[in-house]
Image (cartoon, rainbow, N blue to C red; front, side):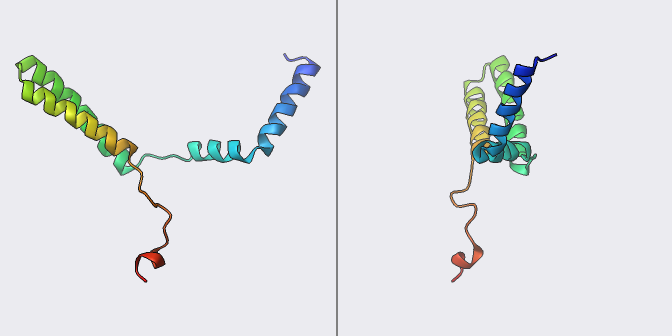
Length: 95
């Protein structure tokens, strides 16, 4: 149980956070993230790359292991890719 002074302080902190639009927008953006096909693809590539690296190491194949590590880098790139101008209106594309 919180004392009265702690409850008042907590209420003050909550009020300050509600008025902080940057915090609220960031929190809402984080909560609204969803599973996208791009992220599913990157996870599949990463899992295949890890399996490929283990198989390449077990088989003694340097080329296969290097190829699997490169695929893991590609999976990371697919995961973090963001378009340069995601909010560009279609009217500007075709004048």
